[in-house]
Image (cartoon, rainbow, N blue to C red; front, top):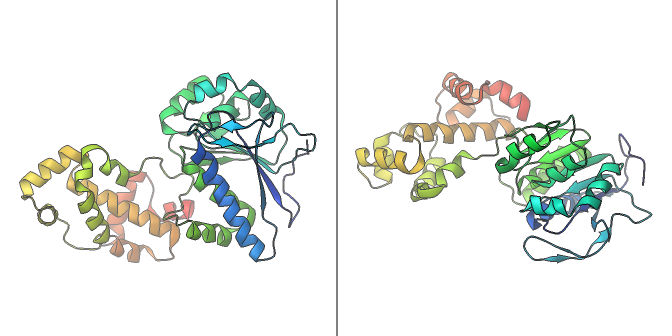
Length: 330
C-alpha cells in the first residue's frame, strides 16, 4: 500500500478506487464515476492530468449489483495497489451486504489513502471499519438513526447532502454522490472545472453539502400532491408576480378559491401561502449560491418584494440571514 499524502504532488493523475461488493447500487457507483470521468476530459483538454478510475472488489471476482448488472472488477488486494481516494458505494440491502463483507471491512480498516468516502449506505461499511469514529458523517435519511445507534462514535448529520470531515467524505442517498463528487473535483481542481462538469451533465443545481436532503418541491409532489404539478411549474415561472393570491392560484387551477384552498392543503399538507414562501425561499437560495446579484435584486426576482421580507423568511425557516446563507454556501 502507498503512504497517504496530505496533498498530492501537483499535476499528477489522481487514482480513484471504487470499492464494490455484492448488492452495490449502480447509481451510487455510476453517478460519482461519471463526474470524475467528465472532469478528466475537461482537464485533459487543458493539458492537465485527470483521474484514473478503478472499480475493484476485495478478491477481484465479478460483482453482481442490486440491479443485476455483473461488474468485471480489479482486486483491491493486488500487490501494487495504490490510490488517492477510495470511495465505497451503498447497497439497497445494507444489512445483508454487511454480513458478507468481513474481508472488505478489514481492508477498509487498514487502507492508507489521502481521502476515503462513501455514497449512501456505504457509510455503514466505513463505520464498521472504524473510519468514521470521531467524524461527522451522513447517510441516506431513512437510515440515519440506525447508523447513529449502531455506531455511537459517529457524529451523524441527518440533514446534510454530503459531509466533508477530512480525510473522510460521506454523502446521503443515491444521487447525492454526484454532489459529493463535484465537491471533490472542486477541491482538487477548482470551481471552474466543477461547474463545467455540472453544466455538461445537465445538473440543474449543484447542491452545497449542508443543503437539506428533503426537497420542498419534491415533498409537494409526493402522494396526492402530484395533482398540482402543473400549478407548481406555473408558480416557479411566476415567482416575481405581485399577485400569487389564493384567488389567482385557484383560477390557474380552474377551481373556486374556497375549494382550492381546502383541497390544496389536504393534498400537499401545507397552505398555498406556505407553499409560495417555500418556492420563493428555494429560488432565493439558488440565486444566493450561484449568482452575484445583490439582496434587493434577489428579493425582487423571487417575489419577496424587499430584502427585509426575504430576511424574515430566511430567519423563520433556516435560522440565518440571506447574507449569512450566502457566506456559507456561495
